[in-house]
Length: 223
Image (cartoon, rainbow, N blue to C red; front, side):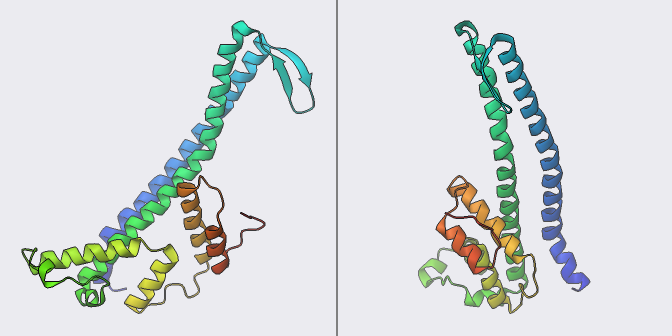
């Protein structure tokens, strides 16, 4: 890559990389705090059970307590706090994965805009064609071009992540997936993001189909 091209892409690539680094560091810190809070909540719940409760059933892994009515509200509050903390341990990684993919999507949109601005002739084959009436609504040709560019990028970002790569390879005449060993991992992460956003993480036939099409190793995961 020439220095000129590299300098034009730096304002797009560098913020994206900085955001990923910042999110990774934040994730480590927040996950540590979440685990610590969950541990504290578990210990508080156990402490109050032992303080007020009477063991009525016990095995190697657990104990069952009977709590007097006068202490049931306080005990329930501690139990709910522990439940919320355990739930946070599940939700936080999901939220970060969703955010990572969202950062990538924003980066891809900005990158495509930069390419089109550098090579405006590529817009000639855009999916959207403006009619004469639509053109008359714009004050300048530049404004019309920007509108067309915005529509084109929106259409691209609505595609699946694999279809986005197919589109870029065809439009820019470049091989992006050749010897790209990380491709199955990328596809699985983006599809898992879709599960978290749309189905609360429940596996769907669409997830299984996409993973199969892209040779993703998912073990014995079934719908």
